[in-house]
Length: 128
Image (cartoon, rainbow, N blue to C red; front, side, top):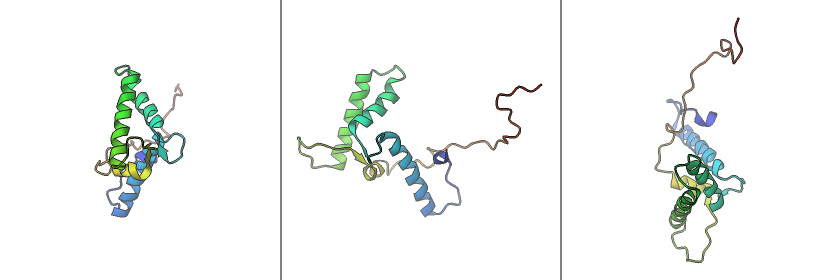
């Protein structure tokens, strides 16, 4: 849950950069399911299909097309001079950072938890 902790208001710029990198790494690892350091098209398809088709609003094939189009766009951005027969291996962490560089995620990817005293919580136990 520490990945969702808000950035401390007294944090230095270096600490803010570190927190951002940790949050990005967490998101990257959610997509890189085989932990090889690259988000492949198949891994990205799986994530997009799970997110979009589980609700039933979008068919699996449509979700797959969305994933394919997004990966093609990323490939053209990261490797602008690809030949038509070149194979794009996938998104590295460095590419992932570049893709998300303009998105402010430090506050978006945070959850404020209430300061709850666990001693007063009954955690499912009935009191008599």
